[in-house]
Length: 458
Image 1 (cartoon, rainbow, N blue to C red):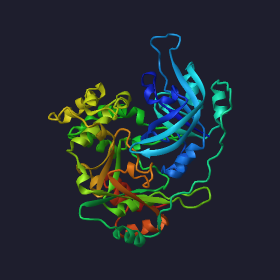
Image 2: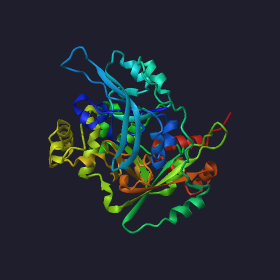
Image 3: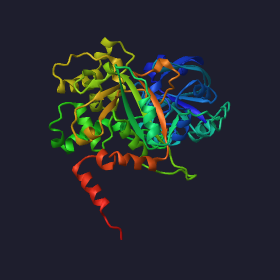
């Protein structure tokens, strides 16, 4: 087992000192942690806290640059650089992880003649060798590098399994009475609002559909976001003719099943409870898979509405190509950031919906997670008391970092409940008229549900 820490290019080695120094300190964006990491390992290592960070210190690290072309030297058309070493003293501060590194072996300017080999052996997914990220691989480092054609002067440290990790313990709920008692007992002041989300499987990541991953932990849709949006707008233009903003368009796309950077939430706790119970499945030991209800508490003044300028900035990220989004460096000063081509392109899209928009974007705003109340543009939003979380560029997912680390705190607080005894809870919810028909309102859906109730089995 080893960490794969990928990033850097020849023009930015001052940001990646492990490629020019044998020891030193470095920082890494928290938002890119545990990408390209299998579900099993990611679930064990999240949320990131003092214990899980110490585990990363116990396994070897493979540092690798992204793939670049040397335009001045044709003998090195495509190359990477590789270092083997260890990390220590990991700590989270703000949106970055800081660490010390020690390099034990170096492989300079490695020609990449078979890009597919690297992507396959390292399980890199569609981003391949062109994305900064920190993954944890359930592979032997020596065997992995041998498969890529490397010869060792010194064998890397071998760590085959993760040590036992204590899992978070959440309150368990087995009936509606217990659930409502817990929800109604929550202390809220008059300036706070509470929202909820239900997951039928407690292992689901608290992230929008655009950020869904495969079993290897690689994103399925993220690299093609702008293509997804443009294809939808091109294929059914009349569907979006009354939508005034990009948020409106994303809400409609979300409604019809397109992956977006929106995450549905609700102000009705019983709706969230329904979703937590809506799928009943069993694990390999025939135990019912638990559901989750996630509770969000936020100050009312931090909630945004459909006409917010900040909402327009984040929503229009969906129109930018992946290369432009990667070029939005929030570390830049505001003036320098707003002079970049990528920022100019984003402002162009924003001004399409808001001609009065000033040509100024605050870099950190693009990496926020916003609570948004959109227009009630379809029956589903109305029936589910809906609102949304809108995820910015490189936003840190709410369940990635432990609440024990206050420096990474979002604009909101998160609490989770484990939901058991799903079938009985669904029966009780039906007595309160919370069923598939009332949650998923719409003529076609309602007619099908009525027909199924009166069908006669053969």
